[in-house]
Image (cartoon, rainbow, N blue to C red; front, side, top):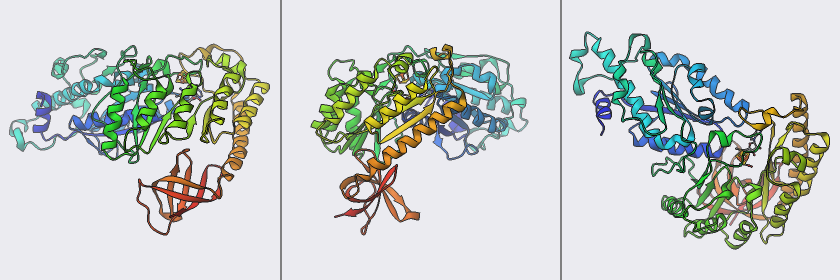
Length: 509
Ligand code: SAM
Ligand code: SF4
């Protein structure tokens, strides 16, 4: 145990944290690894901000709304700083806003981008050092301090920033600055402890840790590739998550086997562009890695997201056809049905090339369910461009569409494009698109009525007296059953009804 941890433990100071996650599946899984790192460091996770000593937000900045949410949260709980609580901002907003966060929210002590998570442990030690120093300082000014020593010391009371200046030696307690770690030494008050991890976007390393606190009881997530080099004109990800880097296939397969040993039967491979995967050891293509994960004994289902159309090869469809454990679902974001807009978005494919990939899936031996992302109202998008997106939805017949109004983001090239679409028009297009897709889904979901589908039992909805199942195609299939199925098991369900976003059925023997 380090000197700092020893002293904290001896002071009876229990280290607790609260973590809230915003944004995509990658963030959710990053949080699982962050939680694992904190637990390993002796922290206990708590359910509310009020119970926690350290409050962390793992943030998303993909659209303006997501970013604003984080600043609202920070403002809502600012008053808790007076009780000695520390605040940290992790993830994309942290990387994007950097040290500006300290100006907007001066009660924040830690700002760490996702490319710097490998240094998180050292940052925590620095933070603990700062905390301990502040407490020692408070203690030394306390007339009762000499009677409070060793194991009999009661838990430290809240530290009032105004009453607890810290010495310049504050960070002498830390384990030494790691590469990419920096610190601002501002005024001598403990509320201005500032630790940053922002300089690692050029790293070749992925955030690999053996301490992942898996929270999804049914699905084990494995990040196989991090960052993005594509630089779509509207997107912050290359700026916030850093350059593209893959893990070795050996390390991915080892983690997959570990997950199976933990009792998981379903694995989801993750990456901003999961299929841009490049094995640093040169042993496996993405399709080969996918197949290899699907062939691990004990694995029933393998999912992967998100796929980029430019890097989507026919070999992925062949792998799905060949390996039964690979789920028959592909999420392939199109963004727009107009080649003109795709070009302006710097998406690196045309409508025709996208549809070629759809053709590969439609001619596969297994019926592959396809979902997508669409952005409406990109600068310069005309009515005719938008009509092309609607016609593409019709042609492909998606089982789900995540649709977004274009949100201008800092640093992105699209910020400087002319012909911004008014907010009201963006909203109108979004509504039209959603209504169209709803019609498509009503028809698509209806055709499963009367068929028998295998589901993984994910839980129970007591109020509806139904079990919640998930199909290989990633559809929700709620069902009734005469005997109670085990959560996490697989069972066959006869589909008896359909809705635009889910199916209804009865368990069959
Ligand atoms: N890498 C994936 C790809 O290229 O398809 C997408 C990952 S991105 C994190 C998730 C989705 O957010 C994108 O597919 C896009 O539809 C949406 N998105 C990204 N930037 C956006 C912006 N500035 N405004 C609106 N939607 C945006
Ligand atoms: Fe963003 Fe484009 Fe990279 Fe996807 S491919 S993460 S949309 S820059």
